[in-house]
Image (cartoon, rainbow, N blue to C red; front, side, top):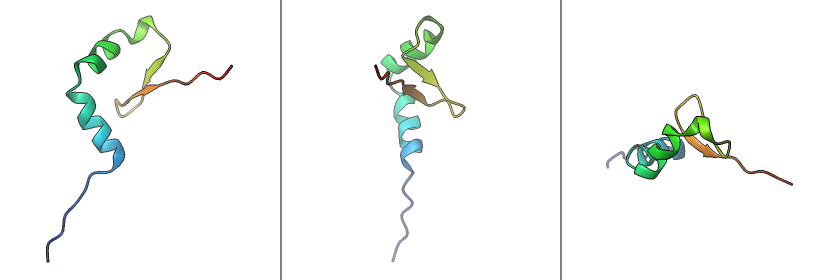
Length: 51
């Protein structure tokens, strides 16, 4: 028998964001917009505005 450890969802998101050039463009321009935010773990989140 073998044991396989799967990363949790946040870890998968963090790894995927590291390789996404569009994400890095957004992160570099965070001070110019309010639609996105970067959390304490450096995960980029899109804000959803309810009107």
